[in-house]
Length: 171
Image 1: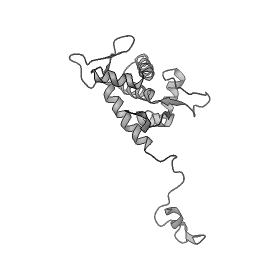
Image 2: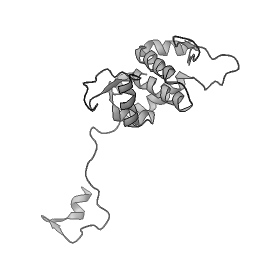
Image 3: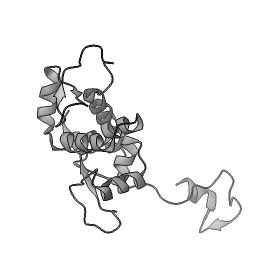
């Protein structure tokens, strides 16, 4: 997957949208050291930025945490995946090393082990899910529309210049 199609850095809000974690949860994980953003000026965290690979790690860690994984494992996974170059990860996927080992320290990629659920600990599955969500996010127009959308018929009788408020709201 080429990152040229996507943003290079992701905000806390972007990460929240991709991973289904709340922005508050991401902020809390940053304060606890579970996540280490590449750009964190301190303060209220409004300017924290994350790389694509960090987002993949956070997404995988969040899924495992929801399934009851210990925070130490989640922290190690996020650090491990965040530090991997994307090209190396894709090369590992080509040789079928797509699963993170939960019982080895340090965390590493391996082939699925016998008797294991093939979807459990599958980083490749998470990676392509994040790619899909990140592309969708990148395809949005820059900036988000702000302001109220007026319901049909609202202010139809009041004039705004030569147009009614309804005509102005439709623009």
